[in-house]
Length: 551
Ligand SMILES: Cc1cc2nc3c(=O)[nH]c(=O)nc-3n(C[C@H](O)[C@H](O)[C@H](O)COP(=O)(O)OP(=O)(O)OC[C@H]3O[C@@H](n4cnc5c(N)ncnc54)[C@H](O)[C@@H]3O)c2cc1C
Image 1 (cartoon, helix red, strand yellow):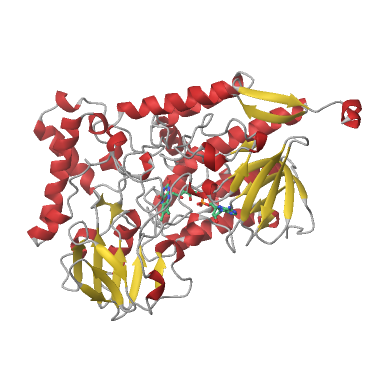
Image 2 (spheres, rainbow, N blue to C red; image 1 turned 135 degrees about the horizontal axis):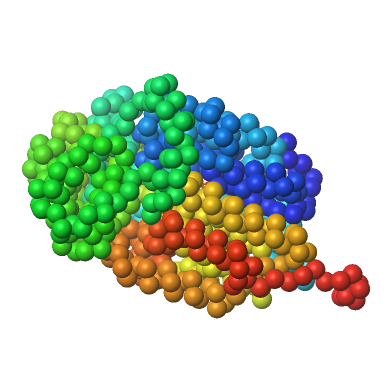
């Protein structure tokens, strides 16, 4: 158990998800006096919070697990190719218990403010339980999808029945039998939950504003024999992930889109559509991401698959996105999503035609109809990437506020540091390599980098590290330039900081949230910086005792 009377630490990690767990492991191994604070009642982050039916990986489970311990890899048996939330949470608990990490963690501790004390080179954190803690280093492992957003709808408090965001799906079982259920949203989460509950509810009404491209997950169990095979190939698997832009096993097809015939392209697509996971997105032709015509051709092919699967042609057309091409937003993977709309108890309401007006005591009202429901589910996503930062009053040198600095979008050095916010490290921050890739693959690299910087400073007696304004500017411009090469720049998605439910994040103000250069380039770059004595970071040595006395 962490000692709640202790008020100073060398390092404080905020967040006990996949990132925070690995960060505290590295710090604990070095004997650093560190603790982890999380607003949640227990560890797990994403996999603690999101308990809605159907919540699961779209990363192959065995590529999502940590790679740092051979023993752990030997011990853990992933039972499904794309494992579900309960198992994922069990896994993270197993890791924390195996390595004795729970004793460093403090729960129900929301960090409300973090102010840098320039005279002492310390961060001062104000915690929701009333304490003020200080530390030299603050490691932000706040999560990229950890701040849920609700629609801007009046009357939400009026509804008499249960209503919840998928992020806050109750811990106790929710009896859906015979219930009239509304799901608002058709993003990645909605696509999982709709497919899972369609045959369990009385009726399901889906309120869709913009459809998303979605393709089959093709999940399946992993037998003992298959797991033994995976274990014997872990080195190979992680090496493949390290080679690919997305940090997955799926490698892009190196043939040129236009070098092969339409028949050959379709042969690839037909094969990938039946294969598990992101292959159809990431093992496709690279032109899909950059060339409008190639993207349009493939999008039309996927649209035909939707038409084949949805019986009512009018519904099928509504489920086909028109405002963006396939793969320019993170592609949700589905298990029977489109078939759910073939059921008599499932209705799709297009709220781009008949907008939602308000929540009533008994349900929802659109511009042309009144609906009665027993349960309302808000599957309306997250204030992604910077949301959790914006919810903390973070102040750096000169009292500058991070919220204000990032008001029009983030600027960072390598996605790991922020000029003017010394000793604040963020392994999975905006513009880092983790946000757009198979997350744990990126986060292990980034946590190692942060830990390396920490060790470097310790060895030299440095007490402050601040990315220079110039280094930050260069990285941020580099990230922006990368967007110009990919069709993703045009998408209304969290990759571009779009969220109509977050003030200032509406259409038209693109935010450069992710690094699009791919994992290998990112890792090379951050390791080069480390090898060049952390070029781009200004270090301050500890003041000699005499000058301290004079202060
Ligand atoms: C439903 C869902 C499915 C996903 N599937 C995949 C997948 O298949 N593959 C993939 O790569 N990624 C996936 N992701 C992304 C996922 O978020 C990451 O894989 C990973 O879990 C993030 O880990 P993290 O530790 O950075 O953040 P999180 O797991 O989000 O943990 C952050 C923690 O910080 C805490 N926190 C935030 N602010 C504060 C504060 N102010 N004070 C105290 N505590 C705070 C939160 O309570 C939370 O527990 C998925 C995300 C969701 C929502």
